[in-house]
Length: 530
Image 1 (cartoon, helix red, strand yellow):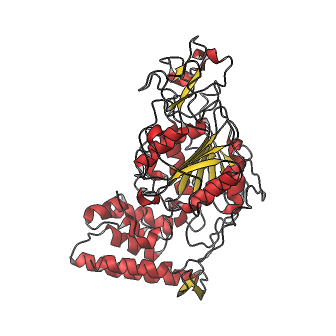
Image 2 (spheres, rainbow, N blue to C red; image 1 turned 180 degrees about the vertical axis):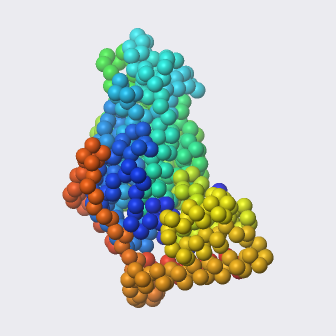
Image 3 (cartoon, one colour; image 1 turned 60 degrees about the vertical axis):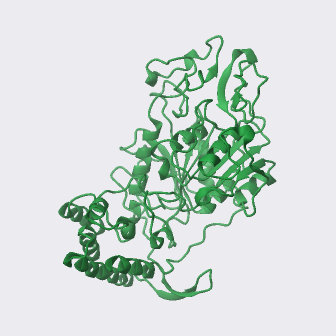
């Protein structure tokens, strides 16, 4: 697991799309202007997705915006996440809401994960179905189902998200250390599958709503610590939040809940994990005090921790919350709230999720899982690429041999100092003449930043930082986002300034680049001196 250098992590970890000043998108992509919402069908993706760019997208800022992936429920559509798109537009974060597989229109859209197509599981069948009433739920993509408890697609939903992240990281500018996931119902269940998959480290936090793993699949995150904010309905009968041992067919496990939304109760339902068992298992993985593998012995704190704005938003809207914060590794807190309703998405959730995201920006523990352009060595990510010394690290950062890497970098970045920085990154990092030549090249590269900024109209100024220290700063040129005529069949634009839940949180300010060149220069000098 690698550690990001301070000079880069302070400003986020830019995606590959940040390297293009004009944000030129791949073939088949329209260019979406800031403040816009569009439904996209991109050639590299098997399923469409809805995308929104905040009104502040492309404005000068100290770090790229966060990204939120929002997942709909069983049978849902991309517009099921419109409340998140509306909130992101005015609060400064990108939102992408993909469409789950529907087996070529033969079934309801859905997400595969945490036992939806893995019954019988570790604890046996994941549903109570005495009359075999659920057998018709088997999806065509599954071929044949092992029992009647299977109820979603058998397509690889994790692979779908991996492809989407790869596409977004190449096409858009966002902070890859601040990618969050939210989902409702089956979409919320799917977050647990993402958290236990090899894609887990791509996310800085998970925020499921009225969604829990099936009974027997409460594994917690595969790569802890990672922040967690779960919301359940106190009156939910579809995915109950608390054990309902009275229900016919309940296995008697105090950590289990039984879906009782079907009538009569004797007809059966699906088995899930209680909210306390889910949050306690997550807190245990994060190393939090008071966590336990058994929900009955867990000792979370009730109410809201000081300064936890996400919890306060939930509380003032009638939710009962408990949390784990002390002892949690890397500040990866766990928050669980029960809202007073049923199987629904409360209107306050987008604001609460944004408060949670703001509290954990840059929380992704490793950059290894986020798809990256293999041959890119941009100055924006140079310290991260050079994170280790030695020929192997430099070669891995370049992703190729020196000629191939230079060829890939040249056309994309098209400035002489990018060529020099590429040569410096590819060369050996040892006490040899090449090491000193690399240092000289890096020095020249940093000087190139100044010339490039001057060429683009950067205006030096003096500003005051939050700690009241005077620093030299400059405004980076705003990337241009040219308007294109988008084919109607590829995108349905929805321009506007919709607002949702903005009263709690201020909009994102247009920040300065605050000493980035100085910190980068110092970082490169330290690496050059060995």
